[in-house]
Amino acid sequence: MSGTSAALEPPVGATKPVRHPDAPAPGELLGPHYGECFGCGGDQPHGLHLAARAGEGVSITAEFTVRPEHQGAPGLAHGGVLATALDETLGSLNWLLRTIAVTGRLETDFVRPVPVGTTLQLAAEVTAVAGRKIYSRATGRIGGPDGPVVVRAEALFIEVEVDHFIDHGRKEEIQAAMNDPDQIRRVRAFEVNP
Ligand SMILES: CCCCCCCC/C=C\CCCCCCCC(=O)SCCNC(=O)CCNC(=O)[C@H](O)C(C)(C)COP(=O)(O)OP(=O)(O)OC[C@H]1O[C@@H](n2cnc3c(N)ncnc32)[C@H](O)[C@@H]1OP(=O)(O)O
Image (cartoon, rainbow, N blue to C red; front, side, top):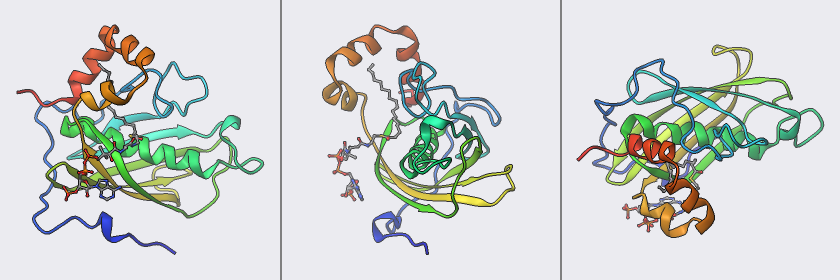
């Protein structure tokens, strides 16, 4: 069974997403938005190490290999981990809009079990934008980019200012991030140039 709640229906007046002229080129690896991120960070030993690549338009592809530390049932990926992979992939779309945004709502269909050792091939696109609201959807397949769909998601991301993180994040990590020139460069890559 699947379906989308009314909260994920773009309102009347929503527009098509526009790829930012300075967005990474199609095929370019995006790299992590934060080294300690559980979804994409290279410095996060238990994280997913999800690698996302820019696609055409406002679309993304990504890969994530399920490791033993991601199990729910014996030999199978935990559903929350799969939801994280979808969330991270959908979040990566913001590189192409050059917008900073956080997940407001994420609806997930778990279609088939995903064994440990499997590489999940994810694809996501922004479908509509309405003010600060960014509507998107994603699929995850196994056995290659044309393999069977195992997970699906639809989401609503909400655009925020960098202050969202500075105001709400724990002081230690925020301070460390602000002292890291690489982190500042990454944040800038998300923001629209004035
Ligand atoms: C140098 C310093 C270091 C900085 C380093 C930063 C690097 C950052 C780079 C990139 C970061 C990307 C991170 C990606 C990670 C993967 C994605 C995640 O997992 S993100 C984490 C999970 N999500 C949250 O923690 C959000 C928690 N929620 C909130 O903070 C608020 O609720 C927020 C911001 C989402 C909205 O709050 P409001 O006060 O700003 O805005 P309101 O007015 O409530 O909502 C705006 C519109 O959106 C709708 N809306 C909001 N939430 C909704 C929902 N859940 N369902 C449906 N509609 C919703 C509202 O109805 C409203 O719509 P109408 O404009 O009136 O039409």
